[in-house]
Amino acid sequence: MKWSPGSCALPLIVILIHGCGGASEPATDEAAIRKVMAGQEAAWDRGDLSGFMDGYDDRVCFIGRKGMTCGRDAVTRNYEKSYPDQAAMGDLRFTIHEVLPAGTGHAWVTGNWQLTRTSDTLGGGFSLLWKREKAGWRIIRDHSY
Image (cartoon, rainbow, N blue to C red):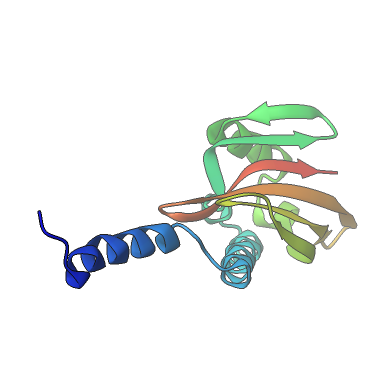
């Protein structure tokens, strides 16, 4: 095969497109994660536990004061026991302190949560490990305290 200047152009373009396609911008990723968390707050406040759980991966593990629970269905059941109705769910607010890239397609998010109800106000902190999937960013580890 005889070489010509144009013969390398297509493979080079394919390599550049493929090489750049997997990367994402940290600011874009942070905005997407913040959007998921805002959606979780809104779902929680309207008593929509299913909508809140949309932010979690099916393989999530939740680590809290009572130990570790893995699997989205098991985590959902724990939330249902602790927050059986909208009054118990109250008004949830997240304060995000940082969103840190953690390798390709992962991020750590730390912050605080506050739950305001008619009878009391609860609060604590969280450390969340996120994974970017085809469906978007999802929590795979939730350490809330």
